[in-house]
Length: 381
Ligand SMILES: Cc1cn([C@H]2C[C@H](O)[C@@H](COP(=O)(O)OP(=O)(O)O[C@H]3O[C@@H](C)[C@H](O)[C@@H](O)[C@H]3O)O2)c(=O)[nH]c1=O
Image (cartoon, rainbow, N blue to C red; front, top):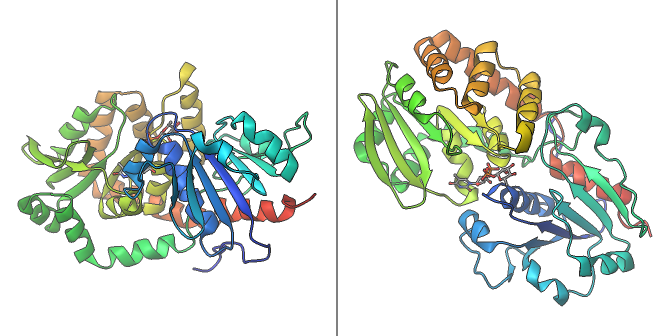
């Protein structure tokens, strides 16, 4: 694809990168770190030690995880449980502290010995102050070189996680409809609902926090001329039910992260949450609604507004995103009904999502930006 920066070519020697992840709750912290570990090693000579404190969450995303706390996940990625911190002698050339997770104290002297480059990888935000703080040094009394690294939507930030061939893979997957049908079957979607989707039904993927106004969604979809099938991730296998005359719900099993994108690519409307599924929904380039992770003092609402200001959505879609996050059932029902019943509005939404994905994909991705930063700063002893 023209204009898309490839991952940094091999201009540096192989680096050892320690990537520390603490699972606060849910799947986003390890979701981002696991994806980042793969991106940093894809077509590069670098090695990643991925330090994780909770293997149960990780196992949902990657079923190969065996709970031993020390495991090769590829030729270049090794998983280490935080408990094993005393078992390594040297720190990496680069140490990434994901989301302010506070590095284990015994590791700091090793970083000093190695003069490791210390990266404080922050949460994703579209707020403008991020542009000024990205890449800034964070002075350390012990002399270690530490820098803030902010993922973001603007070219002045660290960018978004995206594999170089992602949009091409997405388009190829969509060009092969059999892949979608086999996926639905594997998820356990009943044959008659697969048929319904094959004949123009609306596939809705629903990954939400518990306070989402899902009943309003069902009522709105029931006013649509097309039948809808909602796929909702669930703990205990597949279970289908009919919620309204034209709306079916299928609880689907959690899929390994490598298959997560195709759930979004196959759906006409995606509801996502947190940080990682938001970014993947953007790359899907189809209509989506973001349930942002709720924070104390409603700090998340500022982040949501900043993100909406950067988005290409029209006023209705912006109001809908707000209404979903405020659990405003009446607002959601009205706007979703209007969007599904007016094809020109729906098409405008589709177009803005498609365009946003292509526009953002012209910027360098997070792993490429990190690797460039390492080239500039690592190994300066
Ligand atoms: C539903 C599903 C998700 N996933 C993956 C996609 C993502 O990598 C991950 C979900 O992460 P998120 O979308 O970020 O939503 P989340 O709610 O799980 O995680 C959140 O955790 C909080 C602690 C953070 O502060 C939030 O910012 C956010 O990251 O799970 C699968 O691999 N298979 C699935 O079937």
